[in-house]
Length: 208
View: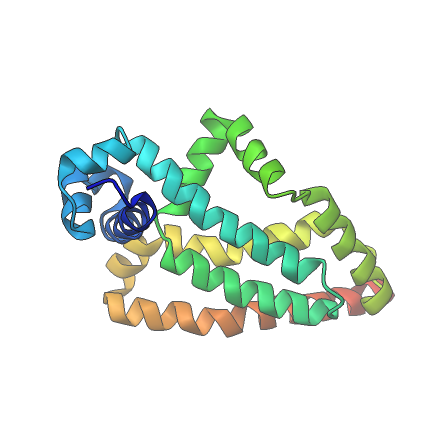
């Protein structure tokens, strides 16, 4: 059953993404992942000895794709406004489709920060280079002197919080899963517009 490992491993990773997305890390079970992938549990453990190692594989696969997209967007020749819009739209979609990731990333950064740094290095991504690119474009295109980390953190916060807060939003506002999915889809457009309007407003305030 292991003569053709790549397709089997890909099926396992895709199955794990679905189960982690639906159940979260704590609620996911290896047997359910095996059933979703169409393999027996012994074969699943052949590839991944436990749930934690499988989750790390899923995380690295998903996050590596995000890092590739970040490099593609921020190191391109596009205007800053286009970069903000394209990145936010991609990131909101990415986070809402991988809702199990944000809390895992936060926990990993506290418990094993060196693993996150290693992932960045393997993908040859320098966060400081991205911030410097943002700083230069904000200055040249908008004539603003701001710390680019504020802009970047604002983008991440506006994108991540509604996903982390999903149970609270559903309980307080009575949103169904379908209603919340539509809300996330709207944020792909409202968040970049909010960020860009905030920059314009900051420019008006700074010029006074």
